[in-house]
Image (cartoon, rainbow over all chains, first blue to last red):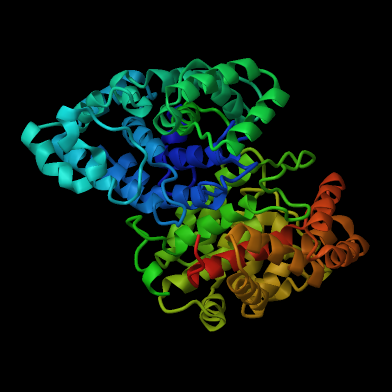
Length: 291
Length: 291
């Protein structure tokens, strides 16, 4: 496993930054993933098309390379989001990058990528990392839920305006994630990326082309847990229904394809599950799953 | 136009290397392109799947960045091919990179990318560039035609073994291209990238999402000229037939989709036309076409 991580800077082997970029691309290259922008369809309603995700992945590269070079997680994340947003579709991969930034940092430290290593990374984040996280919201509109009333001054949608409140309270980026209880991505930060690693293991242990593995793992995840983005945009009942329907369709390619069409038609986009799959794909690539 | 080329190293704007990488990705993200691996289908026969092209584009990044930083065209090309080949599908983008390397070098020199500028770049190549070109053949199997008998010692398939013959004759990379008369990519090198710039103008002047523009420009090119790869693999009659059929289908989305299915079923892959489209997409992005 170390072998394929030795270089990357010179292009002769993929390093962590390159694997992260490839994971972002495999997310759009894998289909069907019910309701997601992927190779089979764009999201006409949202004006999000495949080219925006491709440009987002390219733009993220420089920030991801900074993470691989040991830059603070906040800096790497903010730079990746800045680059990602250099396309006209809007927010394509903010959530993915929030997971990838610490994972790439962890992978770059050598040895096999593990929950312990990435936990070290996220627990070592600082107030400066948190400030960069808030700055990243200045680049794109991100769909987030309302914070509790006593945390209103820390609403992420305030962007850099929230930084003084952050400093007053001395919150690190890990602390900010710990306060975002309902968010699927934040929960990865505070649970040792438990779901990410479990899904990476499912991808690794599956057979066939990696895009098929990702598609199957996506449906499995969707069947197992409510999608945060669906709940934020459509409410808890729709989120629960999406989960039940994914469970029913699981394992039946025709049913999965049907669900895909239906979710797209209904504007249902399980984006948080897509974020998780991208992070899991990255881990699987780091573990040596072949492309 | 200069504006969007100012940076790239820091990820806040796409520079030439990033636009080249995006052009490689848009090539697989645009459909239908009759007979090509694209978002709608893989090439089952050839064991070439979309993930190999995505990994190839990611792997090319470091070599493309060297071109953007002013490295010799041969070094940048060989490094890009080395990185591209770090996937299990085989040759995905060798021809594209042969066009992109000098174009990226030209674009990196500032001002608007023009035929004159890229002609300067290719005419300035050296024997060392030619040697690196031959070394690149060591990384992947590339489908090329037989050279004339008096040039047998320069057969590209000999890889680095051909380098002494190259040095004996004092051939630059431009000279090598000038001797590869029948090859569509070599012809771009010796004609100021005439078709590349004409196709870039067609993409720029078209309307709608860039992926649709690429798809239309692909069919137009295919209708206008025989594809080198098709001729190398299937002979001149098939190449002429492909051209005629593209001309008949042009402008009719249903007919184009049908042609696509048929070409894929028959193993017809107009790869040289795809290379040209990727180069043209790069130029269009450099000229400011929005994604």
